[in-house]
Image 1 (cartoon, rainbow, N blue to C red):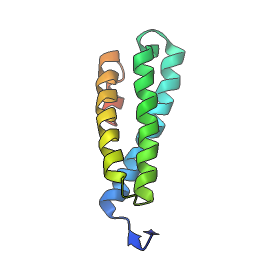
Image 2 (spheres, rainbow, N blue to C red):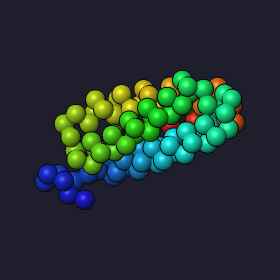
Image 3 (cartoon, one colour):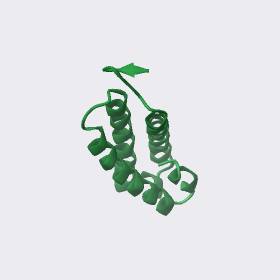
Length: 101
């Protein structure tokens, strides 16, 4: 893929795919958690899932456009994903999703 006269590297393409996958997983888990209730629907946990999903979508967009700010956005995304993964591990039965973040 060519963007602004620059080619997206294989490494960045993989990061974009990871972000898109994480966005989808976090969105699905949010709905699941709300339906399950209890710890799964904890407002802090649900908020982190939504933050992670949105930051992953934003990061993928910035990388696709080869934005000059993509490094900053991806750094913030990485921090949110780590916190989200920790939250999934604490909630229980969501450990399999934690690695995706």
